[in-house]
Amino acid sequence: MSGFSPEWLALREPADVAARSAKVLKSCEDYFRNHQSVAICDMGAGTGASIRAFAPLLPRAQQWTLIDHDAANLVEAKRRHPDIQTNVRDFASDPDCWAVGTNLVTTTALLDLTSRAWIDRFVAALVSKRLPVLCTLTVDDVLSVTPVQAWDDAVFDAFRAHQHSDKGFGPALGGEAAEYFETALERAGYDITADDSPWRIGRGELLRALLDGMAGAVRETGRVPAIDEWLNDAQAKTTLLVVGHRDVFAAPR
Ligand SMILES: C[S@@+](CC[C@H](N)C(=O)[O-])C[C@H]1O[C@@H](n2cnc3c(N)ncnc32)[C@H](O)[C@@H]1O
Image 1 (cartoon, rainbow, N blue to C red):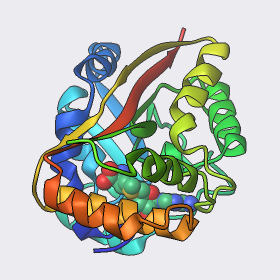
Image 2 (cartoon, rainbow, N blue to C red):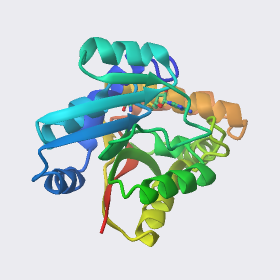
Image 3 (cartoon, rainbow, N blue to C red):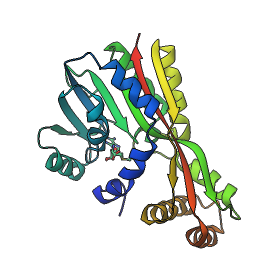
C-alpha cells in the first residue's frame, strides 16, 4: 500500500465516514435544500469517496466532475460511478480548474497538502465566482496515542514538521491549512460552518498502517533516533490513535 493508492484510500474511507462533522455536512445540505440540481467539482478526488459521502446530502439531480492527477484513482472512480466526468489534471499550478456551471467545489483530505500561496489562489478563485465550498478531513496538529509512550512528543513534533514538506504545491501548510483556509474565507465575507472531525482509530489494519506511515515520515526527518523502538512499542500497545482533522462548509453571503 503506498501514497494515495486505491487500496490505501479504501482502507481509510470508513474512518473518514465516521469522522466527518454532522454539523458541517448539515450546513451544506441546508444550503442546497431548495436547489433542483447541482454540479459538483471534487478536487483531489481519488476513487470518489466524496461522491459516496456527499451525494446523499445534495439534490437528486447531480453532475459530478472528479479531478485528480492520478489516472489510476480516476479509473477506479469511473468504474464505481460510471455517470461521472473525470479529468486527469495536476492543479498544483492552477486551483481554478472547475468547469463552467459548477455550483459546488468539494475536497476530502487534500488541503493540508497545499501551501499558503495555493490556498490564497484557491480562495480568490472561489470568491470571484461566488462558489460555495465543502472541504472535509483536513489534518490539523492534534495527535495522541493511548496508552502514552516514551518518545510520543518527539515523534509527533517530527511528524508535524514532516507535514510541512513540499507535496507538489510548495511548502505544505500541513496542520495549519484548515485554520488558514477558514480565516481567508471569513475575511472574504463567506459564512463559515467549521468543526473538528478527528479520526479515532482502534486496533486493526488502519492503525498498523498509520503507525508505520508516521514512523516512516519521522525517519525521513532524522529527528528521532529511537523511532524504531517507538514503533515497536506503539504497534504492540496502542489501543487508540487520535488524528485531528477539520471540516468546513463555506458559502458567500
Ligand atoms: C489523501 S488523497 C484523498 C483522495 C480522496 N479525496 C479521498 O478522500 O479518498 C489526496 C488525493 O489528491 C490527489 N492529488 C494530490 N496532489 C494533486 C495535484 N497536484 N493535482 C491533482 N490531484 C492531486 C492525489 O492523487 C490523491 O488522490
